[in-house]
Amino acid sequence: MAKIFIYGAGSIGCYVGGRLLAAGGDVGFVGRARMADALRNEGITLSRFDNSLWHVPSERIDVTTDIARVAEADLVLVTVKSAATATAAQELDTVLRPGTVVVSFQNGVGNADVLRAAMPHQTVLEGMVPFNVIERGPGAFHQGSAGELEIKHSVAMQPFVDAFRKAGLPLVEHADMVRVQWAKLLLNLNNAINALANRPLKEELSQRAYRLCLAMAQKEALALLKRAGIRPAKVTPLPATWIPHVLSVPDAWFERLGRTMLTIDPLARSSMSDDLAAGRATEVDWINGEVVRLAQRLGQAAPVNARLCELVHDAERSAGRPAWAGDALLAELQAATRRRVAPGKH
Image (cartoon, rainbow, N blue to C red; front, side, top):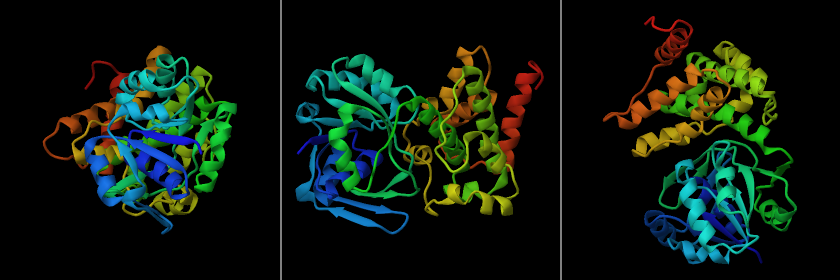
C-alpha cells in the first residue's frame, strides 16, 4: 500500500488525511507539537455539513514532528500556510526520494512553483481544496462547505487516485490548473471580507453590502485576468464572470439565485477569520495580494484588493478584533477606488 504523508497537519491537512485514513489508507502526519499531541490523545474526529461523521482512534494515528519520517512517502500532500512554502520546500528536498509525488493543496496560485523550483527531482502538482474546514476542538475537524478536490492531471498521480475515491474525496483532474486556481482565488477574495466582518460566512453572504464588497474585489480581479489573457475555469454552476452580478442583486433574489454559494454550515467562517481570532498571521498576501501583484505586472492598479490587504494587516496588528459593518466596509472600498481615480484628493 502506498504511503501518504500530510506535511502541515492543520485543519485542511488533518481533514483530508483523516478521510484517507478512515477509508483504510496508510497515512502519516507531520505537524507541530500541539497538533501531534492532540491527535495522539484524541484521535481524529471528522464531520461534514450534511451530518456525516468519521472517527479514527488514536492508536491508528501516525503523527510526528520529525521531517525525516517523510522519506518513507510515496505521496506528500503539502497543506502548510503559503508563508511557510519556501521552508517546506527546503525541508522536503533534503529527505524525499527522487520521483516522489508532491501535491500543493494550498491557497494562492504560485505555491507549486515554489515547491517545484526547490525540488527538481520530484513530481510537483498543483491541487486545490475548494471547501472550508474548521478545527472544532482537539482532533476534531469540520467541513463547512461543499466542493471536490481538484488536481493537475499527471500519470504519476494515477496510482493514488483510487485511495481518494474510496475516501469519498474523488479527484477532479485538469490539464490546466492555473485557470482553476484563479477561479478558486476569485471565490477566496471573500476570505478577507469575512474576516473583517467577523461574522459566519452564511450570515455575511446574506447581506448585500458585504456581497457588493466581494463583487468589487472580483470585478477588479476579472478585469486584470482579462488583460493577462487568463480565463478562469468554471468551478461553480455559474461562470466566474457572472458571479459579481449575482452578488449584487437584492437579498431576497440572492437567496434564490445564490443557493449553491450558501451551501455552508451556519457557523462556518473563513480560514482568514479563524487566523485573526487565533492571533495568527493570515494568508491575505497570497489571496488578495495575488491580485495586487498581477496588477503590478500589468502596469495597472488594484485599489480594492490592495485596501483589503491593508485592512487585514491592520487587524492582525490590532489589540482588539475588528467587526466592520457591511455599509462601512463598502464605503471604505469605494473611497479607495476614488483615491486611485483622483490621486491627491482625499
